[in-house]
Length: 301
Image (cartoon, rainbow, N blue to C red; front, side, top):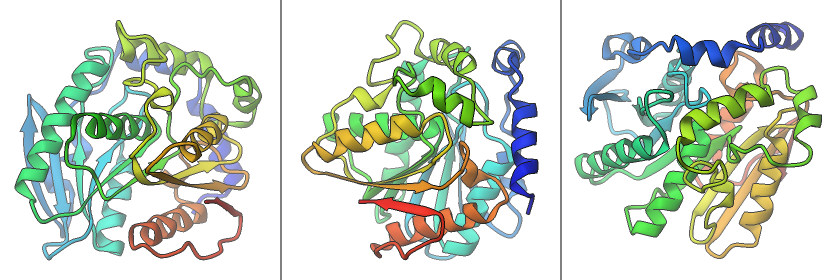
């Protein structure tokens, strides 16, 4: 595993001012990391929704629960190798079935198209795997998308997941919390300017505060059980605290917030011990076990 100081230096290198704009100008597409053949010694079945690839992966035996995984990338970047490694970890070490959805991205597409494709993919999964218990799980932008989609399912009467897991979620694309600038200085991986640029490309004609784009402003009742993990030093920490506040005032929603001391954005996708701790926390949550005490983690129930 890499020392935390080296990870921070690497993250700062990646966070060059023009990175998001460069991604939008020359977007990489094709989902090469998620081709079925890339999942060694696992069963992987691919299907397409409106031309967008999805792949369901398991160990070849009965698997539970069935995780619908929505990757991060500021709504402009496709899933990366570390996302696939995270999927494989959930399958191999925790016996889960995981479906990766390569949802539409900006600038080619906006939030409405993304939600439409996700809705079709989820409907197909619930029809194909009728006996499975589904979990929505997303990191970063994928976490925001998972929460927004959960709110849509509640509103439309769709089949609800048994639980939802949000990892360093981007729940306010407008980044309107007054503490945002302070936490930008602490977080080595994110910049407000770059995120706002990407967020506008994703929102298209919708306001950045529309719940389809920024679910922290959406309806919070009846969302069921939600686990949120967040780093104490990441830009999205104030938004996650506000999300917890809103959830605590809602009916039929129970949100558990796990705050990781000194951690940066999306740390759970990196090869450090805190990632292993986060994965164990997810497994405990999905198994209905009370989270065991963990060094450097504050659980706010």
